[in-house]
Image 1: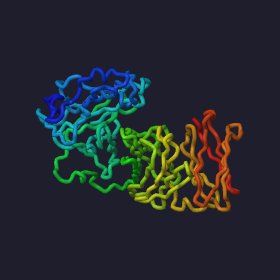
Image 2: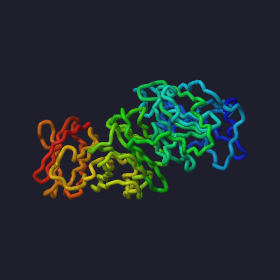
Image 3: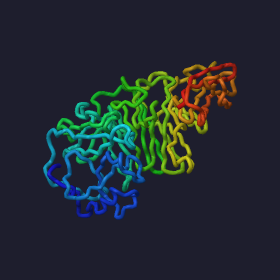
Image 4: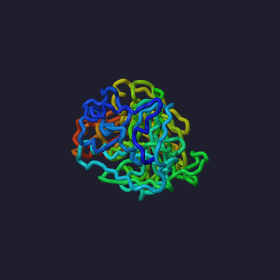
Length: 454
């Protein structure tokens, strides 16, 4: 809608609260603003200069200073409005191809630069927009992913993430509702980008919108894990795409945009990025995907294998909890319950959970240790790493030693080795950065692996 202002958001039971805009926008503690604003836009440039007590991402929210300001075509807003309120727009319906939206990202080296580049935009059309129809040329300088908030309450909800035909929703939904705000991001290494809305991206059929997916069956291997607890849920997807790498790929991966609920599930790339959707060149035996789990409070939570498709023949997926050494073979519907203490809930759980691919006989007793049967992750390591060891014939325990470049043993531990195998956690805090040798012995079988500590 064009030729309208922010005042058009007013309904019979709702008027946007912006009276304290100047207070909120400059406050060191914006959360204490009274009355609290109910209308926001987003300006990622604020991350480089604002010093309030909000997280880096949340520093970008800004309250408009006047309801008479024009509602810009393609710009997104956050309005805290009741679900029962009916919003009607008075103006000129937007149609036709639009001029590119000029988007920006703070320069590398500026404050909070790693969190910069997020842009809140909006579907300008009086029809849903199919983001799978947005060509790369129409999102120049942007990551390929988009994010739609699925609200569950006041300032609460999760993100439905979509990239390259994969989504954290159960239906791979690429649709953005009419007038719906959504997030995109200017890519790392770029300072500018653009997004062009075109009529050809609009949904024009009244058929079931869930049908607007890929026209042919997707043969790519993929799996979807769900994290649930405290009445909340989040999802993570891994899939195979030719050209993808273990690092972040702006056209194949979706960076994790943390849910305000505090419940978050993601994987970690070799370069440290958190991903909501993780594209890989292949699912192969020995591939380990470290997971990061965030929870809002102490309690009981569940990880569930929600969907599998097209896994390579002879390959299975395994979930490992390194805290208690449990490894669980996954199939659709398999769930793993775990507890989080109050202390653990205060920070993101990294290094505890991982997803590993292995042969269907991976948990059977093997005759000896091999490079492919022993998994070490993350590698490079920061603070600690995990070692997954399979069951070995005639071995009741496994000894693990960490050696520096001088051949000196700087760490040693022994663990029981059942037929199902075990997982050990090796602490590296206090060790100098560099290349180390991990030496394992189970019975008469020995193996050495290279580990990089950063």
